[in-house]
Image (cartoon, rainbow, N blue to C red; front, side):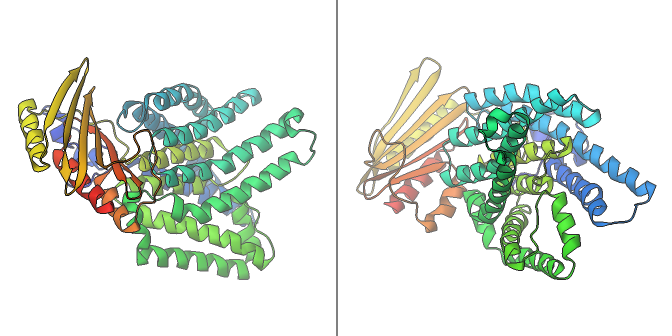
Length: 465
């Protein structure tokens, strides 16, 4: 089942082409976008069950209270269900996440998801509630670990760190309030941690337009419609702050933020709101990896910085972190790994030899136990080119080297020019550049790799040099 639309062209076949013949589910199931559905349910819970009761001073009608409670439980159950699905799909996506990362998610998911499900439908003992919060913190740390292990853009990995810092601060505040030894003799340790966490949340909101958009989706941040929409919404909130400050403070309290009375103090909050809205509005309409990042950030923002968090808020935040991780890893949708496509080995080898001929070199193929290694050498202009394809367990690990980069270096020493970032994003994979020496491109795809992509990568690296 496809849980999100995929862009036309490329990628694995969808719909009936992937399922083959036989009984097929209705077409509307293939069009389901579960992340957006969960976001809608979480937003309804925020407005109806948290903001409105905080803002309205009089008693609300019984029918309204019943419906608000329904949105809370519906959002919680839906978030837990999709969180369990997302963790299961994470374990399946060998192309996106390394084995240690997937093993870590499996261990945490086995503990966290059942506990969240229990907490959503029935009260849990206090000691078990602590286990829920600890498992949630470990899931947040696992998302950072998986982002770093993926070896992708360091900018987006830093953005993931910014997202979990408020969660870690809130977790420490609750832990230090329960266990005096963790306060290290400071009576104000919980309160200080809460303030630092709120400040970290504001910094994450301000920095989100720079740190979170995937490289392939960065151009969406220049959309005039997105900037104007975020500006209008932020200006509306600023007007409400000037005319109905007490009501706005009550609404902000539902998100866990203490809006100050002084106008200069509110500027930081407005800047964080603008940055968050700009990122969400720009990325959410995307049909690529930006949609997952935008939806994940929106879920985290809707959950807020409340303490202690409800089960629905915990599961929404956990799901939001996973969606951001998927988007940063380059996934277009929350869906299982597509089956390997059939291909003709002899034809693929003939195309590899043709590619070697274009570079004026040779193609060598070696079978090493369960791996098949194809190496193509040659020249692009006056620079040496080496193309390497390692085929193992249904995946092709691609590497293109142009020039003479340091043999043992894992990271480049020169920044990627801004003009080339969009091309790299469209090509996929990761690029390292060594000034005037060489460049390297790496990518991992399902077998068989399209050799035209290696040719494009070699041309791009030659342009960078």
